[in-house]
Image (tube, one colour):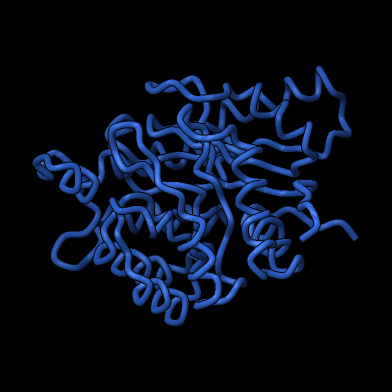
Length: 289
C-alpha cells in the first residue's frame, strides 16, 4: 500500500512532560513534532489534572516561533483524579473556562484501576454507587454539555462505563468516548464494545499499544483492526495514548498504526475518517473545504 500521510491528523490522547513519569517529549517538543508532520491538532493529557493552561502556552510558543499559519493547535483537558479532588465540579468548570476540550473520569484514582493493580480499591474515587452515578458527576455532565466538551470514560470498569454512559446521555452529553476499552485495566470485551456503539453511539478510542506492567507494552494493532471490522470505522477513533519512553515517539507510533491499517485492507477514506473527521467533530474543528 502507498505510504500514509500524517498531514491533518488529530490525536486526542498524548502524554507529555512535565509529568511524574518521564515522557518522551515535553509540550513544546510534541508541538514541534506535530508541525513537522503536518498534524492539525493534539489533546495533551495528564493524570495530575489540568493541561489546558499548558496547551495555551504551547500555542503561544508555536505562534512566536513559527508564526500564525502552522495550522496546528494544541488542546488541553482535565482528568478527575484525587490530585484535583476527584469528581470536583468546581475544578472541572475552571478547566473548561481555561479551554479544556476533554473531561476524563478518574484514571489512576479510579477504583477499577486500583483494584486491577492488586491494591485496595477503597482508596479510589467513587463514580458509581448502587448502579447510579454520584451526584457530583451529574453536575459535571451538565458542564460538559454546556461547554460542548468531550467526556472520556478513562479507567473505569465496563460495568461502571455503561452506567456512566447512560446517565451522561440522559443528561444531554453528546460527545462520549470510551477510553482505550482494549486495555487490560479496562478490560471491555468486543461484545460490550459493540453493544456500547449500537445502544449509545459512543466513539471507541482504540490506542496504539497498552501498558502490561513492568515497562512492557503490547501492540493493540491486530485487535484494533478486528474491532474496526466489527463495529465499523465511523465509531472508532485512532489515537496513540503516546508519550512513553518505552514506545516509539508519538509521530512514529501514529504513522505505524495508520500504515498497519492501510496495509491490512482499511481504505484510505476510512483511515481519514478515524484520524481526522471524528476528532475534528469532537473538538469543533472545521474540515478544509
